[in-house]
Length: 222
Ligand code: CA
Image (tube, protein in one colour):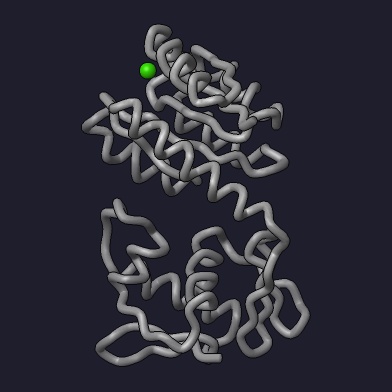
């Protein structure tokens, strides 16, 4: 039985969510403010956290940031955001939220998003498969990359970008496709972010690992 933590200061809403989630067969607990939500989330007892952004004590985004920094094993987080909270959504996904739901929401949507996040988590827990390209070896689950046997330190974004290319070798991707796949569907920004990160990656893993296809985009050949 999956255990889900609800962090939401609107107590009526939190109780409604709790009833619905329990009805689905999940175990739940709830917190009404940021600090207690964070400490419960860090307990490692939960398979998923539903996290409101506007919370007393600590904002949901700050809870998320600290959780990602301190947690020992990865806990999926779905943010509950205000309708006009575009920057919250972008910041949240950037900080490692798995998904977000805009308030007001239909409970069916919440249940569907939870099922999806829990399914992804199960896939993540299966034994790691290694990706290789030339002298690069990546363990996607362990977040480890080696080049010729030597570890290479990548930021989360660099890692995600390289991972996507290594999962789809020998295919050309446009900047827009890479933005959508790696940065996410709601990313607002310039496509030259892709160029910037490709050059970061080339500096770390070698300039020939990723080729530029002039006028089109990028390809990683194996
Ligand atoms: Ca709130």
